[in-house]
Length: 75
Image (cartoon, rainbow, N blue to C red; front, side, top):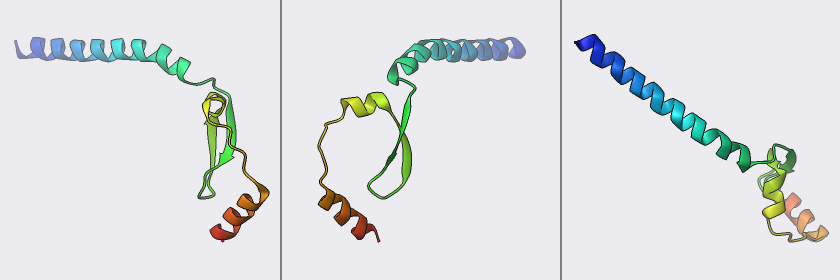
């Protein structure tokens, strides 16, 4: 009897995991366009960002002086 309840639990766990994966896959596909752009973070690290995220962001332009000030403050 112990083996049967254990295998039943495993079956239910695997079934729930499979259902979650099937549900999450289309949501993950919609989340990003898949096309990545390389950008710098404020602390100077290079990261890849989805183009769709950039399109949704505000478009504040940075002046040359702000870039130079940022660059000299980073050393």
